[in-house]
Image (cartoon, rainbow over all chains, first blue to last red; front, side, top):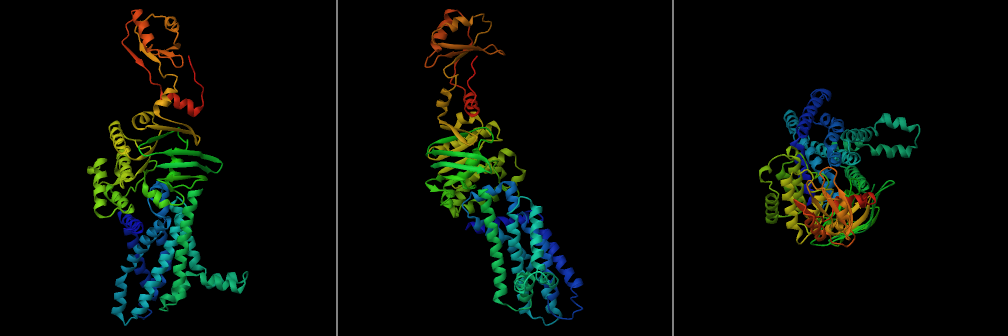
Length: 244
Length: 311
């Protein structure tokens, strides 16, 4: 077994030993349910799709994903196990990847457990399951990106609280940056080209495109590159710690 | 084999390890001795590849820790300071995790797992959470982790810290057995440990290597080396008699128990003359001892630079 899977298995197990995993699953499932039916007007819209369900995901991830990732490196740094882990025959990349995959798979499990809502919408009407599948894919990719951000910022500090706040802050920025209000605000001070570039950074924009069922390579690439970029930044941060 | 060349590590303006050059060969147990904060743990972290040196190099079994970190780490078993382990795991889960991380597949993995569990007597706590273990047991789990892949080089940061005398004895025996064909570097601030374990001692303070010798050689540096001490209850014996012996440099009397210590002049053997004199005086001596030298005194002298104080 490679060190990546060994690290991943250990992380996954540690989720379920502590109540973190169960609390996360319950909160995620309850909130997706409530928000979809009450805030999202699931019935009133009279459409057999999961648009209101997916619309809530970025805002849920904003709080829940940093809660999963905050302990990733901060706890190891504080507890001294970082020294143990990094003196085992594993590269920083492998360790980072293993930890990230654990968080990502776990969120994937949470997503999979929302299947009753998929059954519901198919029962109520003729839903386009292709679009729903795309929605799930987009949501999972976005969650991965959030997890990579959380992983990176957890490597920055030995305090889980700081890691959580920083990650939530970056995530909210990446969600909001494409909103019309923000773009209007920036329009006064920045050139148009830059505004366009900023708008493309928005996670929401790429997620909504995928969730509409339009699988554009550029949207997929955005998430893959952003995820890899944040993971790489995390690896660099960890490496920097060894020299300071 | 462990080799370091001019290994240096600075934290800001503080130099934690200062141009440390060491070479430990198979079969040697080198005790890294030094006061707290001397740089022992930093030196070990540099050799283990956890920290990057400011300058200089470290090699484990010929593999440069900076250039071939994985090869170096595979050859090394390392017990970090404080024996960190994942508290939420059970001993079994933790050791199985190390088996996987070390890439020990199938039969070898099981065999090594069973072997270290037996060697460190962990059978009874295999399914206990590490968080709930005593300090001594946690240290044993850390040791088990370090020797799991049967490494040719072993580096243990304060391996017996927090163990009771019986456990200390068991761990020392284990290290003794492993020492035969391995390279072992241990750090400690326990002088008794040096006697019990090491065939070489390196004393460091403020990051610098101050002495590198066998325990016996260090003891020979002590002013107590070759001294003779005895208790003569109710002795009215004058110190002058002893002081007049040509081989004797000085005499001290312990103010608490009245034990008399006679120091030799350099290169002189004084046990026989002292004994002869005592017999001649018809003095009842319950017990007489030839001192090997006191490591604690040599240690203090080397690490603080205090000159010898002679009564």
